[in-house]
Length: 357
Image 1 (spheres, rainbow, N blue to C red):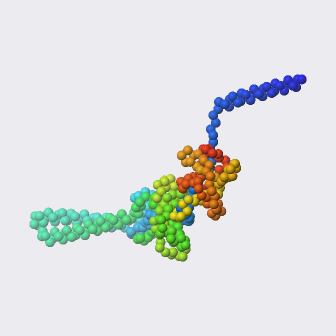
Image 2 (spheres, rainbow, N blue to C red):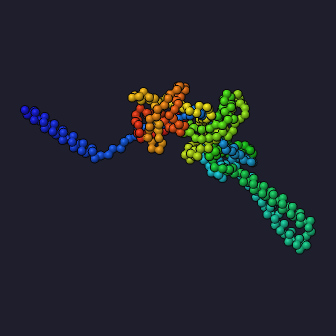
Image 3 (cartoon, rainbow, N blue to C red):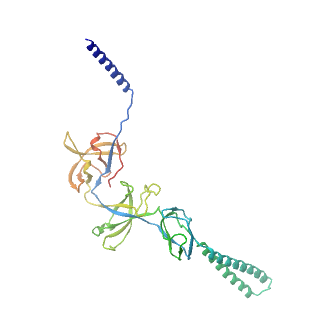
């Protein structure tokens, strides 16, 4: 009997705790955590895409060199260092050139004084016109030699003609360099291009209308609008046609994206086709509705990050991971390709960074 009473008390106490817990929970608000998904834009077969591997190159660079010969006494930069316009990169021993400058400057000052004196004497008819013209010629020669010596002395300092970074050093400090010998290579980081090789079998693409996008390997999933700036009308070594493209996307800025010559990139070429009502989507985007056995995809609505089920008609496989579908989609649509098993109709989702081209 005592055990039955204890059991009743235990049951009442448990019920009381449960009631208090529920009343406390009713006053709490809980945030709904959106399911993470990965999305891609549907690929319209009105545009066929091909992807090639390329390498980033400097579109503007300069191999800087001294105009004169001599030993270096200062090397103020290292490879990879950023320098501003007018920065002194290297200095050559100026001793001999300074002496020549001082001598020519003294001769110039003397010739100028002599010319001023002869000008006054000519006005007083103390010297002939011929003597004055001789003084004029001597002054002209002295001034020319002085200006040349001044320019030569200035040439002992190698300065950057534009803002950029040092891609390569060809010489070291205290090394004797010849006139015109390369000292450093200066690259403008704001003007880069991507060079790739177009196979000879795709040579017709270089002359037709096309869209170009570039993705840098250091920023996977981010594609930038570009244009073809140069095509070589030959296959120099039999390996294909060299093509150069320039990124013109306003979103691509050197301050945000650190891309340098030598980096790897992917170039996507988009060309016209005649299958405007068909689309290629990743196979992972498709799922089957159990109640109706209908094949569908989740369309992502960018305005409010909501997903909506859309029925589609699958046709045939393209490669190992893409499938051709008809009806139900438009070129500007985004669809879910990862995480589709965990979302429901009208649910708000969180978009993960894209890794698809």
